[in-house]
Image (cartoon, rainbow, N blue to C red):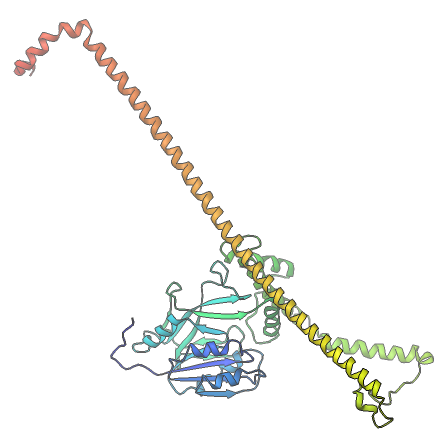
Length: 425
């Protein structure tokens, strides 16, 4: 258990920027309850984000909506009462280890800026073999140590050299619940790449196709174990879509392409051509009113008495339509549930397939090691046999010498040498 330190702890402001994230904002705010003040900056959400925040924050501040978080971050220091600030997005949840670390670090801070490892959850999954791990981001700082600017993906300027990057193997991290599915990734990509002030992909030549191939190679290369059909391969390709859309928008801007204006010009040209060439065969038209496609049954009640039989038939028809609609809604919900279950099953199959591939690779590695070991055993066995043969041959030669005539004739001399060693000097 972490023991509290005796020195004074610096006070902390935790501030969360959010828009329409009622699914995650409660969890984000629960992870920062250890802070001395908790503030929710709500960008005019239309769901229950602000209401949920009111139960977990000291203050909820409504701000105008903006397409990216950088515009809102520029003003967060003005809302914070304390010198230390922890800032999070509405999809960034602290790990318990991160909350405990920050709380203890504020007794004796070793830096002015802290980078926390961030675990991405793209398509609701995190995989340490994917390109995005390990990445780290500044989320804790002392006032005056950085400046926020509106540049998308480049909105933090460091003003202090006293930074500390937390190692990724400590358990201290941010869980970034960023993208539930591909649709959300594409929507966010389009929104972010439409900002003029953004960090753009480098222009590596005129060929966009070459850029696309290079981007794929780059993100596949940054992945680990990106086997065909695996999750790391899928998110690497998904990451490429951001590069490609960004590059195409830069290409579009460089050529001055203004689609809406050009479409308006084409429509004006078509209108003029219609007026010139179709005037003789055109007839003037003007609707006298705009009529709803389905008028309510009581609309004609004042015109003529309602027939009871028709009223009952109409009521039965309305009831049947309502039942049909409810049945259709139930079928759609069942379809969505089945689709969700099928997706979960597919993800699990992919996970098991990747695990089986990993186990197969491990088995092959162990088999290779076993083959190398067997070859080494055979080599040592052959060396042992050669040594035995050499020893046997040496014994035979010694026996042959002992049985020779010269050995027997020189025997007395050897014995005399042993008895009178001074003769051998």
